Amino acid sequence: MCGSTFEKIHTLGVGCMVLSLLAFLLTHPMSKVEALITFSAFGLGCALIGWATLCNSWVRWSTGEDQLVLLKNRHPEAAKHTAEIDLLGRRIRWVGPIAHVDTGQISVHPVSPDEPPLKGSALTRSYGLFRAVYWTTCCSLSFQVLFGTVALGYGAWLMAKLYRYLLSSA
Image (cartoon, rainbow, N blue to C red; front, side):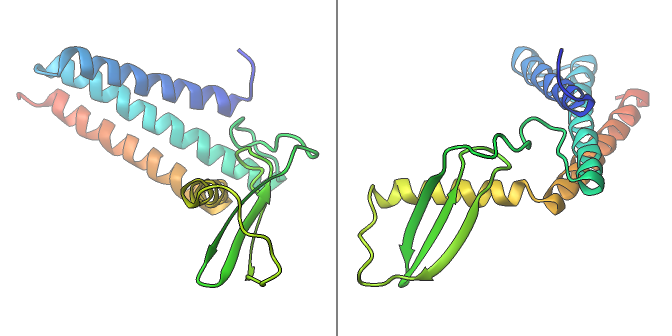
């Protein structure tokens, strides 16, 4: 299995969450054992994904390099794409490669009469711009730290609740 340690931890977390989903769909947890297996896998998956994201955030902050494949810059000379809409007399434009952390540049400027009309439907252009803003936000270091902290905290909280449930007579 190739990839960084953080990618392996993240993949293991996703695997735990998939197992949790399968266990939930197959058993519809009716017994204590089924519930513990299903939700322990989910809690462990959340915690592992949170840990991998937090570790990646630390490395990214200290070295400037992402270790998770979904967040790595793809190629410095990747093809550039554009998504733009006109809103309230302003043209909102994103230009960049279609990849995750390669988020490109977002610009806003007044629409001038000599600019050509935009191509494609408003829905398609809006969706493209939404994706650009979404990935710009999700790939920010502050979002990664917040997401990793919440995922790790939630996983740990859920595991503590499950441990109390295991020890209970319910």
